[in-house]
Image (cartoon, rainbow, N blue to C red):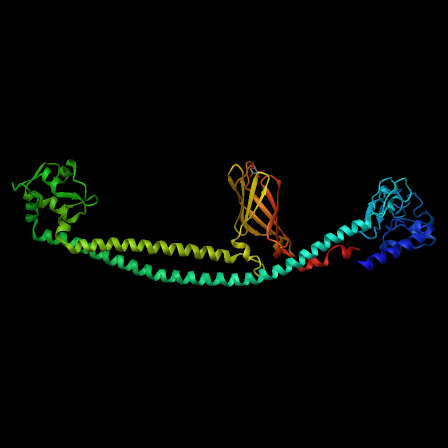
Length: 452
Ligand code: MAN
């Protein structure tokens, strides 16, 4: 800084010494890189090469060259531009129409050298302010880069942790699959046993005694089955607790209300043996404890299988979620990975914005309704730094049609936080998101020092 000051002082003194001379008048409004075009010779070649004029006509307040190059220090040429040297701050060009127009444009006051305007040289103050700002930024950058290094280390650990988690889940899924197959096999076995017992039970009873079954159904032992007797003894297989209705009993009787043994043997007996529609109430439970046990075992197996199936589905969903997360690009050093399970909020007017990186952005109004402003889409920064912008798309539809979407701009900061939200056009949001992981060492090379 000291050096900078003495340099500018030296230049100021040199300029002050020359200011009365013709040479200075001629050279006004020119940057040092253009000075080579204005060497005092007999003639001057317009920079666009269009004309040669005597050197006296440079800055004589009369426009000779089409490109305005003969009048860099006056307002004579419509296309001319005046170079503000602005020592101590940063140089810049103004349209030469602003030279001596009574308004101070250059902070070094050089554009008002011949007007009533009383311009102060404010370049040093401006430069100092900017230098303080840049120094602040540099400090932020240094601190940010240190924090970034820590986050990179955390990212690597987190990445390994997630990989281990995935392996564990895969192991659990494999074990569950074995269990599942075992349960399926066991269920099939008990079902087969049950079926065989049921079929055997009916067949044995059937083969042995259509007559004894008839007798069992014939409660009043009058040698004929009535509708009431069927209603009393038969039940529907599907609805075991339900009594047979009169219509159902009549239907089983083939439309009649009485049935003797031969009729029974030719019709209802077949129904009882071959169809699984009706059965004799209580006969199975009462007569075959094996069947009852098999039935209970089948139910138990079905319920355990269901539990294992549910656990297997849950684990597979977790695996697929984790795999999806691990396919996301978290930066070359996984430095953005720590953001994955975090959410950041900011209140702007009546809305609370919530950014859950790599997941979604939402907006909640004070009235209470929450809308999606987009789901994680992709990195969309510059080719040099793709990690400077994120895009979240396919949010809730806007009233005009089209869906809401959000661009998140990542900038270097010492904390990870949302710093601002804008909606420059309807339902298109821009979020300013600061985080140390967005700090880039290359930024250090920019700044005011290189411009002075
Ligand atoms: C809500 C908010 C606004 C958005 C309008 C569009 O009020 O989501 O951000 O502009 O809807 O109708």
